[in-house]
Length: 268
Image (cartoon, rainbow, N blue to C red; front, side):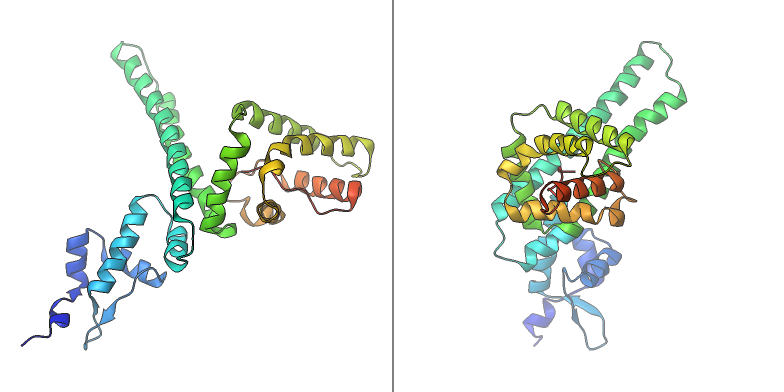
């Protein structure tokens, strides 16, 4: 009689057929330590009930929009606050949905122009398409940076913090204020960090940071500082809100003011 455990094992081809995943995906997930596979006497991969259960978990989390790094954290640390992680992921998906909605609205506007007999040149059309592509690419690139410097639980803390700290702010106006300040600092450099002009810039910086600093735990604030202390490591893949030159100046101005560590930086 066949061993029930053996007859329950599936080949990689059968798993691909049932799951809709490619063998390349299965091997990649296995290499990342997300799933496992048994081996037959001939050395072929096979999957039993436990391996299939884990595979379904990873696939479900991936469909929910979690990155592989986040999934690894979820599966490897059962003590994580799952409810907060879900809330953080929902927030991220809401942002992505809003950006896609904007791109779709632009494309619908172009289609309406065409339906009304008005011309839409190819440059305009390509620009509209790129808006949608850029929104998704930018978010994916930033997520890789977050995964490098923050654990899944810390990312959940960030999402909760943003809701508490910035719920009553006009975020468009807040972003403009940051842009104006960092542009002015950039234009004024080089500048003695201890000078009155430098300390005035620092005061403006700290005023903009106030909503964040009122709510952020010290560990989270330190994590933000660490992120921008390594700005050279990731600024080539995403567009930082300010240059390393500005960050180094603020660090020096803060040290000149009090001898303390650099202030935490604004959320990316």
